[in-house]
Length: 249
Image (cartoon, rainbow, N blue to C red; front, side, top):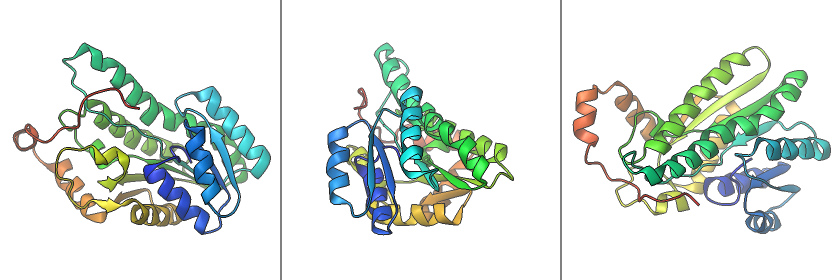
């Protein structure tokens, strides 16, 4: 699992460790990963790497397979979010970082495991998308674009792997109480604690659901947003709250 050192990733790691799973945890911050691994029961493999580096992710996958075998579940959870505005040239770096981590990082995470899972005839590839990918949110062009991309990418992957025994699960969280959402200067309806979100997400992965929104209330909101006429959407969201601009950490 990528993005395991904090937030939703940490909550998922704690959930799976409590159920007796053997874990391989990936994140850029080796110290945070080591701290978390020391707090978890059972066997945990600490794998420091940047998910946006495909060569590093291949090394991570090779090490995990060598030590633990082909995993049953791979969760591409790593993600960054920051406010962006296209009119500011300096925001291009933020766009680039968000897309590389959130979208290309998911591709790099899954790629090394597809062939061995296909050969075995089973496995689950779970990608953490977002309700923010359903419609473009003002001031969040990079994040919305990255999450819309993950939704489409995961659908493409699911169809490509149809009949292989590999389940592709798209998870679209709404607002989850994590450090990423703590900086949001606007109301967050149906905000869900990270540990409860992890429990629901793990259940969806175990069931092999193609698409799931957590919490379910945001699933209703997502459906409404998807079918809302553009003129109405523009009028309602033009003045919506926006995340502060800057480079994601």
